[in-house]
Image 1 (tube, rainbow, N blue to C red):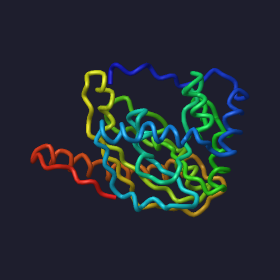
Image 2: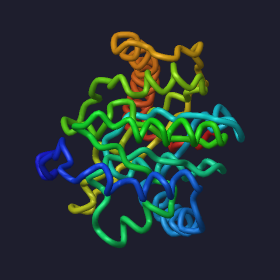
Image 3: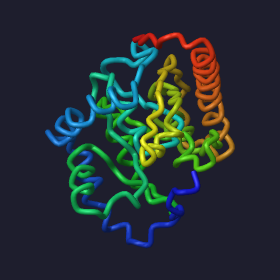
Image 4: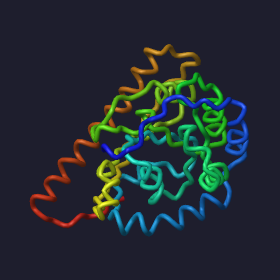
Amino acid sequence: MADMKPQVYKDPRPAEYFTQFHTSARQGSTWTYTLARIVVSLPTILIYRLRAIGVKNVPREGALVLAPNHFSQMDHFFAGVYLRRKIRFMAKSQLFGPPVLTYIYKHGGVFPVRRGHHDEEAFKTAYELLDQGEMLLVYAEGGRSRSGEMGEPKPGIGRIALESGAPIVPVAIHGSARVRGWKRLRFPKVTIEFGEPVSFPVEPAPGSERQLEVATEIFNRVRDMYAGLATRSETRSGSRTPDRAQA
């Protein structure tokens, strides 16, 4: 992981700059999402031999939050390939800037969260989208793990679970920690598992400790699934048995 760029934890740009992206996200994604999905799906499946488990655990309609672990920027694509629904992504604000990518994010249903700031606008957008019956993806760790190991959950996913009451689907992505090996022509097998949805009674103003408690409960489910995937991967490598896709 040493070749990763240094993290920028605080975006110096004013909150007003990001208003356009929240406005666009609340109006819905456009054909840009569909086009991006078409372009990346086949290469993602072929190059990383992506397999999915538990797709049936993801409801086909209604408000929903996917809560995966996060090792790679490819995780966005891994999460959506086998799902029929569109995903609305909460992403760090530092991703917004380069013209082409920013256009894709703006019109593809991505909205920013200003890390390093108390960004209430990101939560307002998240709740408005859930009220519209959308499916969000919020990384439980709040950002990519840069150690190659799973990190610790941030309270944000707990706050969303408690204040919205929306079902949370824990998601484990195994193999993406080695995705950066593509520079050395190494392409790991990636497996994604969707767990059973979990919901929490609505609490209008949960304290930070309560938010973290719920976030930890959600992420513990992710950890358990990830550990199972890791064990199965090691077993397959040892026995050289072929993978079997499960849905």
